[in-house]
Image (cartoon, rainbow, N blue to C red; front, top):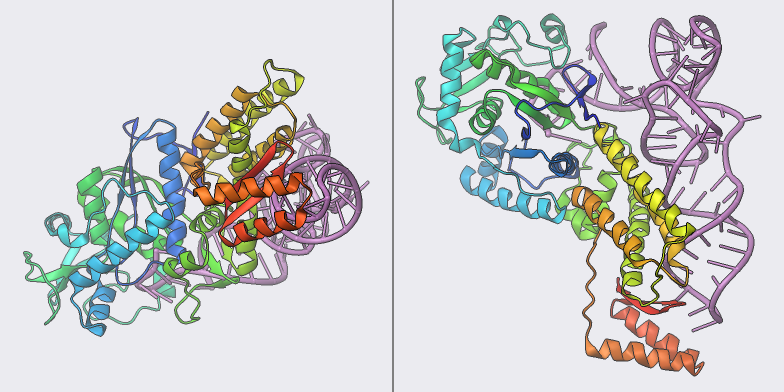
Length: 469
RNA sequence: GGCGACAUAGCCAAGUGGCUAAGGCGGGGGACUGCAAAUCCCCUAUUCCCCGGUUCGAGUCCGGGUGUCGCCUCCA
C-alpha cells in the first residue's frame, strides 16, 4: 500500500519515501515554555503523535524530536513580570507541558532538546551564513539577508516583493529589508546572554530549530511539522537558514495541521478565548479531548465548542462501550465451537475493516475515516454479542485489532479494572438475590447505592456486569 | 493589495472520475428489559454553495461567480 503525505512545500499529496528507510527523521516545533499549552498546541502535538505512532506501527524507526523554546522575547518578558528567571520559568513550564502531554497520551519524543543547550550549533550555522554572505552584521545584531537567498518565499508561495508590499512590520533601521530577520541579538542588560564571535547576545527565534533539527537529525530531515501559523515566517526562515548554510535540502516533507477555532472564532489572547489544556483536562476526560482532536482530518480546521465536545464524548463512549461489551463477553462461558455462516461473515467484515483502517491512515493520516472502521466493527460485533453463543477466537481477533488501532490512536481504555472491593461484590450478589425474589425495590436501591460509589450495573441476558463511571 | 484554505443532511464529518453519497452526534419509531443501562433494527441528503464546461459518466477535473475563514505582524 502506498503511503501518501501532503507536503506543504508542493501543496500536493506525495508518495512518502524516507531518505534512509526504515529510519524516519521527524522534527516537530514544540512550545515556547512561558505558559501552559493551549488546545491549539495540543492539536499539533496529538496529531503528530499519531503520525509518529502510525509510522512506527508500519515498521519505520522514527527518530522524533520536539524542542522546547526556552529563550525568546516572551520568555524574558514573562520572567520579568513574574519576578523569576528565564531558566526557572522554562523548567516550570516544561514540567507542566510534560504533565499535559502525558494526560493527552502524547508520547515523549526521542529527544526534547532545549534551545539554550545548543548555542554551539547555533553559532556554527550563523558563521556558515556569514561565510556564504547570507548574513550581515548590523548594530551588534546578525541579520539574515533574504534578498540573497533566491528561494525565499517558496514554502509560503510568496514572492519577496509581494511579502514586502503587504508587510506591516515596523520600520527597523538595522535591517536592509523588512523581511530580513535576526539570527543573533545583541546583549541587553539584565537579559540572559551567551558568548559568540559577534559579542555576547542570544539567538533569534528561528535559528534554534534549524540548529536542533540538524544536531539530532542531520542536514536533511524527512518530516518537519508544526502549526499552520508557523509556515510563515518561521518555517520559511528555517529553510533559508538551513539550506543557506548547508546547500542541501533541509526538509523532504513539510506537514502542517489546520487551525483549531473556539466557537467558530480564532483563538487569541485579545478575544480572551484561549483554552489551556490544563483547565480542559479538569473539565473533560482527556481521552474525549484526544478523540475530539482526531475526529477531523488533521489539515482541516476544527472548531472547539461545548456541543462539539458532547458529540465527541458520546461518540467515544460508543466505542468504549463496545470494548467493554467485548471484554465482558470474552469472560463469559457461552462459547461456540465451530464457525458458522455468521462467523464467516464477521471474519470477512473484520478483514475488510482492517483494510479500511490501513487505507485511511496510509492516505495522509485520515484519522476521521479510520475511526469509521471502528464504528463499523462496533455495530456488527455488538449485534453478534447479543447471540446466546459466541465464538471465542473470533472475538479475540477483533480485540487484537482494536488493541492495534488503539496503539496508534490511543482513544480507548482497553484494559478494564476488574478488581473490586469485597463489599461491592457482596452488594451485587445481594441485588441478584433480591431480583430473583422479585424484590425490585431492594434491587434498585442497591443499584442506586452502587452508582453513587461509581459502579454502574448492567443486566444482560448472560448475567449482570458492572463498570466504573 | 498579494497568497492560500474551506463550502457535503438539524449538527459534526469522510469522500482525490464509476457499485444504491462512509461513519458519528442529535431526533423519531420499534425490539429486548420488572425498570434501567447497554445493544440491535427501521426512518432522518433523489443530492453535495451557484452558473457554465470537459467526459459515456463529476461531490470528485477545468473556468467563472458567491460566501466563510486564515496568512502576509509575536502566535500552534
